Length: 177
Image 1 (tube, rainbow, N blue to C red):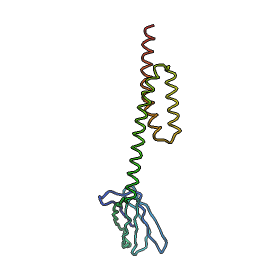
Image 2 (image 1 turned 90 degrees about the horizontal axis):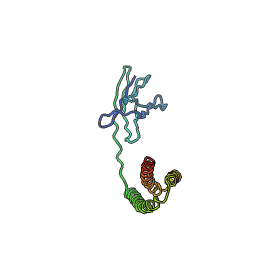
Image 3 (image 1 turned 120 degrees about the horizontal axis):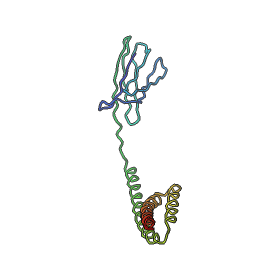
Image 4 (image 1 turned 90 degrees about the vertical axis):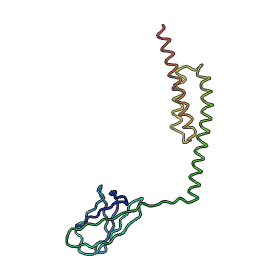
């Protein structure tokens, strides 16, 4: 039996690494366990080339001589280095700028909505406020617009605080009766 141990450059055992090799021209694969090990039984005596791969790491190939005795081997995988191209960096920056614009716009509009809500809440009943919260929550569930989701979430927060204040005032009035 041959036991291979797969680890990264820091010595951490790697679970789920695929070990590929051939026995008598037949491709075979095995997977490393939680301890970074895979055990291979029944290999005829000879030299075997094992290729180890795992997502996020550079594949590594090692050739080991297998005899009649139990053997061990180890394979170290090096993490892949990802290099961003100018185009990818520009796209990431563009997405960040777009998200920032949407967020700033949502905050500005939300501020305007809050001012309008505060003005109209005085004339709304607590039922009207609760209905508005339900309406905003429903819209969040159906829209794909990040802007609308942010705006509605902030507005729900404001309305919830106002509803709580209205409920406290009603409780005070009821206690006076």
